[in-house]
Image (cartoon, rainbow, N blue to C red):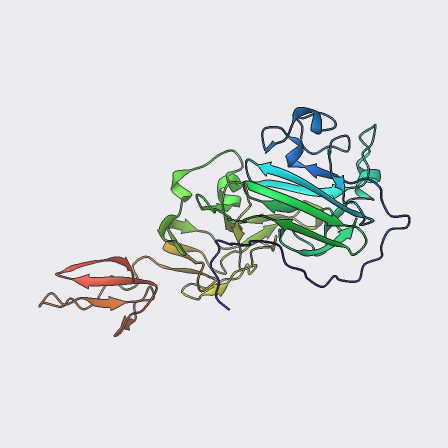
Length: 320
């Protein structure tokens, strides 16, 4: 099923919970923890953040949630998020920073991997992950009795700039590089021309193993990321991507002068030669446009997508 990456979720809907062992006794307190506890990332009164409002993630930090009257184990908080944040919940805060103890009571996404918010099951200390959400005004509701976390409000996830991030550029952890910035062709299509990508390999063994020429596509916060999860990708073959996987992707064989295409409508990543469809194409003398796909195959009736248009002796990429 095709989908647009910009998500619009109005009032939260109810979903069936996974197997959930309600805590006994039921918690009487609940705290929003993580990035929102950094006062630069969320708009809350300074005295509403317990702990240090400049450090974000800490077993000492939390924003108290209000117990919902008449609903045991249900807590809520209204909050304005100023930037992409990662967060979770915990019924306790500590006086000393003991992460093992704190994580043992932490409420996290039920499935491994950071989850986009919506009405969804939770887990208690099921994994060390967290949810992420873009800027906006929200109400978070945690139901410890049913194991459901919901968010109310308008969720509009803005992707922002998209980069090729990999072992060959230090994953851009030290900052952006225009060389690896994708061109936004349309709301659902991004492309990047790359001079060379080496073949995927692994150096070393066990915990010392290091992936070479491994990469993902993502924005600078990693709030949006895409990977095929396949480290033996072939040229000119579309691969369906996964937005939650932490697995890297790579090429089976080194390639030079390729175009990487991220298609959010088709939900695919394709790496194809830049010259495909350019060299040896037929140029219509009468000025009528001729179209080819990125693999160099002529398309008689092109529809939605990225194509190479040849017209008047000139060839170039166009979005239809």
